[in-house]
Length: 167
Length: 162
Image (cartoon, rainbow over all chains, first blue to last red; front, side, top):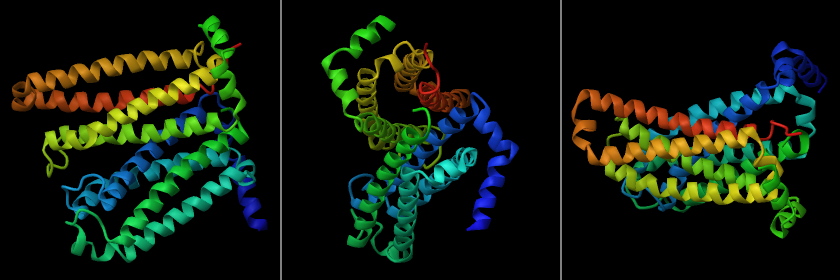
């Protein structure tokens, strides 16, 4: 634990962290990038989830749709993670102690596990069902959970701002 | 604008929104979810215009994403209106808000004009190489205009009015 605290203090003291903390425009700029990136993450994930549920893009083969859309999800996720890290290092102690922040990261972890389980089990034999109107039950459950988790992640993400700094 | 904000602040609807502490964050969350409907829909349509993902025709792509785009825009307007009524002084007199609305008007005009022209002069836009290049350029510009609106929106929280 000691080393984590040390690492956080070191991060907080870096010139980058100081700049984000003290500049008038750096934090809002990083936060704007974060909003655009997360909108792209959630919107593109939803395209895939709605296809699994059989609610949209049903005229398309699931695997082809996922192959076209998911690279954008991952690109946007990298952008969201980077901008999120920049915001985090500006006040690491404050964020770690923030309840909304903790819930958000717990939810991100669960969303990640959900995705992994889907990829390893249902996603594995996608070729058997990817022309069907909807995925098998396990896939539909994973898609529903994914939609619920990501919406909750947005809510708790926004709550962080209300409990730490200007809204 | 400040006078309007002051009047709005004292209306009963505004008072109710102010009283329910969880309502503003909830409206903001819905506003962000709506952005998540709009931006990726625009991205998918613009990518198709740029020639990515030709497994769907332009018409099919538009049929898939345009309803989500419009639903998202309506949800954005509704939640945005709720946020203005709930915190009129934070929004109306705020230069970031005013710039955002101006950019919104410009973007909607450009996007609609582009769409109308695309439909009417399909031979020019898709037939000639110059037309195709212009179409691609427009698609990229429109996408970044929408992103700029989101940036101006986030900035509302950081511009403080005396």
